[in-house]
Amino acid sequence: MELRESQKTKRIPWIDNGKAIAISLVALGHMQSIYIVNEIIFSFVMPAFFFLSGLTFERSSKAPFVELLRKKIRSLVVPYFGFSAILFLFWFLVRRNFGLSYQTDATVLDVVVQILCGTNSTFFVTPLWFLTCLFMVELCFWGLLRLREKWLKAVIIAVLYVPGLIYVTYMDLLHLPHLFWNIDQIPFCLYFFALGYVASKWNVVDKWLCLLKNNVGALIVSVLVFALAFVIRDNTMSIFLFLFMHTVMIHMGLLAFVVLSRSLKETAVLNFVGQNTITIFALHIMVQSILRGVLFKVLHVTPDGIESSFVLSVLLTLVTLAALVPVIRLINRFVPWLAGKR
Image 1 (tube, rainbow, N blue to C red):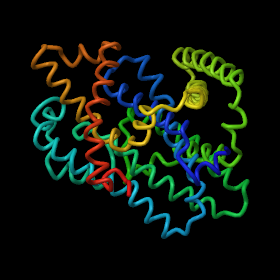
Image 2 (cartoon, helix red, strand yellow):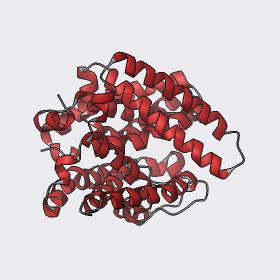
Image 3 (cartoon, rainbow, N blue to C red):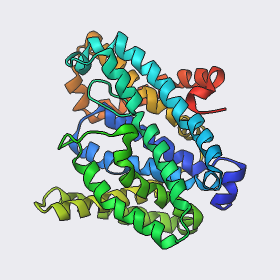
């Protein structure tokens, strides 16, 4: 079944596989601080989420603006503020008294302002910035689709990508400020959202990755090119070459991610995780903080000891996902609107 047809009738299994893989990698990335692991994960995992969102945007792209706005407020903005309220309570009762948040002078007003601005910070760590950024990206892309000339759409997205790449690459290093609802990251994220939309329109994934030999070949090539680009990027003094190799890493990582998601069989576990990514996005750091606290108090395992051990980080990531299962079930049953569901 083609992608556009299956969108109208049921969920697309490989997209749920991709969401499950991506959110698991995000949780793993936040559990440890091993340089190579984080460089691999965060080189492509957020572009992958925007790519997957673009894949399923076709029906929304044809909706009137008011209908689109209403739908996206329900599925993105309501979960953002709902889960932000939960994370605020956790910060107020726990995090501001322990750990990194304790080492800052952040006030309640600081956190409330940050939540309204839809951004992330060192004192109120929340991955929910993705929801506000995705909301703005979808509105911008809907507007771009109203342009008549296809070449103009492509030129605008391509031109915006370059400064967007520079910004997201150096924003932490240079301590660049995050703008309201992460509009500063739109140029970068818009490119991958559009890439997913075009892949959906042309049915790229099902046409090109429908045979086992195509999957294996694409996976091998993407991994090898990714590794080569990673080595060159980390050993060059040229900013231009650094950014170019980083772009290669992103695209090769994204290709490997899509191939793997398309190759995996549909399972109940992957479906469950993939269909509940918003809840996992919102609460996994909270659960990880609790796990770190328990390990430190009971087994005297320091945060540095956890973050430097890949095996322990993987195990704790699995524990985090398992611990969220009953929470997800409760939310889906009693307050599904909190997760953007009807």
